[in-house]
Image 1 (cartoon, rainbow, N blue to C red):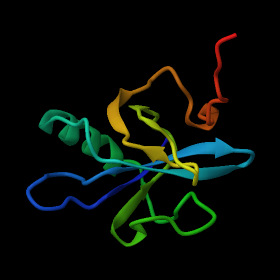
Image 2 (image 1 turned 180 degrees about the horizontal axis):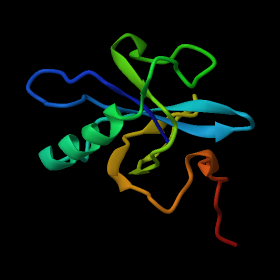
Image 3 (image 1 turned 90 degrees about the vertical axis):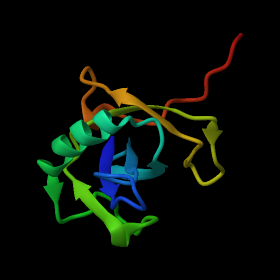
Length: 118
């Protein structure tokens, strides 16, 4: 779930990275930022959607990385992200944005259980 976006840096327009979350019981759990995988067109289109969802309040119970430069959004957009692995802190390692998921409700986004072949 997209919880917010950070301010753009250097020459990149619209936003720097998306702030991501999953549902953990009755609260949102921070799982990191994704700042790659965006074309210029995707940055622009996604930013247009995100600014309509702006809110003043963070969805997280505690502070998260880059909070000072983050614009929070209402939890409604679900991002599909590929990543290398989960860190020991429960954050995504090397996430890459793939697109939005219109088939998923934000409140249904939870961390997947470990999968193993038997």
